[in-house]
Amino acid sequence: MSAEDRKIGRSEGKKSSALPRFRASALRHGYTTGACAAAAAKGAALMLRDRRPVEETEIVLPGGERPRFRLHGQEFTDDSAACFVVKDAGDDPDVTNGAEVHARVSLTPPSPP
Image (tube, rainbow, N blue to C red; front, side, top):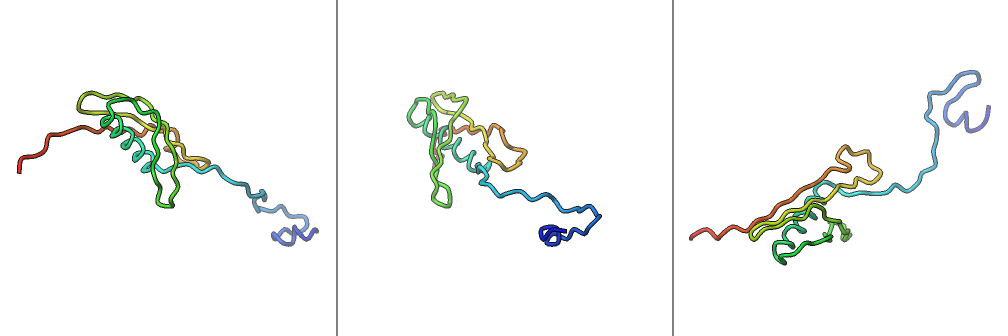
């Protein structure tokens, strides 16, 4: 019996139920649904302000990172704008990976005092 077999609790003649060991590798990280929603909302607000399509936008995450998000489905009128971000969950097996996170912003007249 090898030292590795003894280390993980194998005994001679018995099959081990231990999982195979894999070398750790860097996982590709993605972004939360909230980060995608913030990016889509910022993109829609910028389109409404500037009255032109915006291709991508940047947000600041709590850790100081500044990721850029590509915007899709840009549309706007005189008083509203909308777009969406396609969520990238990275290597996390998140069921929302690939989801379209939509945002729409619109101008409303100020309320009377």
